[in-house]
Image (cartoon, rainbow, N blue to C red):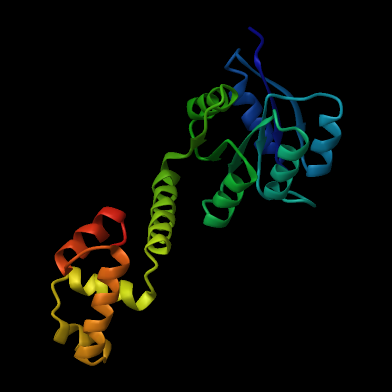
Length: 213
């Protein structure tokens, strides 16, 4: 089988040299080119197309995230691993939205880097282990937001639901939110109706099931 063809994109020569040296120890991976900017990469791709591009997020001219968007539009078969020092959510989620198959920190071990290249070349996706928890938190927040939208609950109703789950009485909820008990009773009834349940206990159980609280 032919080796996995890789192009390195980083504006620091010492980084490119280091990565190239590390990958030279893996005969199934071949570095076929280097680029120090978006323009240099696009010129290189006019001559040869790699299987995987190792892409930094900060580059002269067009940044790595915008470049990833362009690569996925014009060369969709090329796999992208963002290789960077930055753990920022902006870069992480920007890279994933751009279609990058991997996001790896430069602190990764040589074996992890080689393994990441093999994984994305085989059609899999990969994140640095330290970033997985952050991504799961984002997905959890998105799931809760979707569940809340489907339930049709307002911010106030969601707060009342949390207080109910904490065991608060109508009087305690009224004191907490500076409402009358009549207002609280009406809000509770609205919550029960929207969630399709008969009582407060069922509302709490359904909210936990849907991931609302």
